[in-house]
Image (cartoon, rainbow, N blue to C red; front, side, top):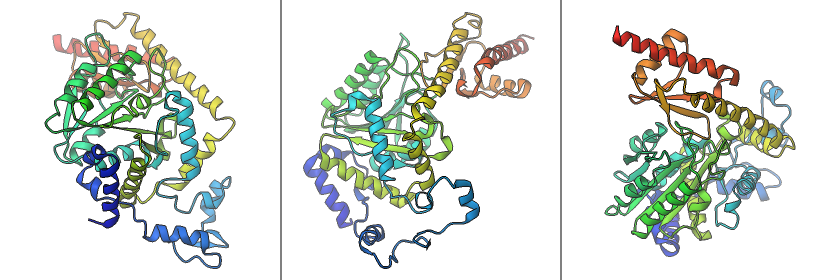
Amino acid sequence: MNPQAMKLNETLRKEAPPVYDMLSELGRQIYFPKEGILNQSAEAGKKAKKYNATIGIATEKGKPMYLQVIQDTLSAYDPKDLYSYAPPAGKPELREVWKNKMLEENPSLVNKTISNPIVTNALTHGLSIVADLFVDAGDAVIYPDKNWENYELTFAIRRNAKLVHFPLYDDQGLFNAAGLKEAILAQKERGKAIVVLNFPNNPTGYTPNQQDAEAIVAAVRAGAEAGIKVVVVTDDAYFGLFFEDSLHESLFPQLCELHDHVLAIKIDGATKEEYVWGFRVGFITYSYPNEAVLNVLEQKTLGIIRATISSSPHPSQTFVLRALTSPQFKEQKAEKYAIMKGRANKVKDLLDSGRFDDAWEYYPFNSGYFMCLKLKTVNAEQLRVHLLDTYGIGTIALGDSDLRIAFSCIEEEDIEDLFLTIYQGVKDLEGATTA
């Protein structure tokens, strides 16, 4: 094992043995080279006043070299903020602005011990970092049965985890905290569990209320008190799009400093929150009541980044930073929020009218981009194909009965026509069955 990795691991063994136990074998082996090219280049950047012949970029007249045909489309930006490599942890100014934004939008997070957010290549990359650092073959990764399919690729296929699902909803249509607790406690013999909580949920658009949140926290605490090391990840991809009586903060603050057997990790980003899907700017933030532990986790995270993508794209970080610091940012974001809330409310009003009750019921939703129908009489995949082929309407089939609708990409005035057509599609299939 590399001496730098050994030193990081020794710090964890001394400061937080449960966190050391949470690491995968790769997580224990990984480190960020302190004496390599990046470190030497950073030192040269401070001291090499005459010539700096270190890092592998081309320069011209003291600035990064560029093609004018590219710069012409980006003339509002200084070349130094576009073409050179961003640091592996991301632009320092962006990290600071995002942390301040996170604290402002999550007041419960103030006075909690958290790391500085590290820039990732959007949220999938953040989840992949978690998988690499904490998941070994056979480790239990726990999340609800209503989930984003990429979790299986990230945790099961890439890292050979054992996926443990529990029903998202209980009999009252609330978050099934009892199912979560049971799934965690079932890992007592293994002694370790990775829990992924995605709110607003994809595919259902569900966010817990405060009562739910307290039950979720209690479930995680029960696992920790039973001696299980719990890595709990909040996938906050759709954070901020809360339309009704739900939590209006991330669960992350309530999981911070919960127990020395709990490591809380927040995955979020500009991707969905700021409507910049193709920019691929995300963040990973750790919480543990020990700064030395947070420093080790940052170094190991940077090691994973260095070993995989080296660093996230610089231009998109610059674009997001400028947006976040613009005086118009909050006003423009509020305008888009109002549009999204209007669409969500329109969907709910329509579904609550009773006009479609013979064809489906819907899973509780109050936030995010999506909602999910539970079909009563026809197969979801057959309906999806029929809607696409006959009416030119695209939906997502999940299992036998569930149909996901992304109201985020439907104009409010078109929502009624959309659901009327889906209903007609159901009736078409019902008629074909009885004919």
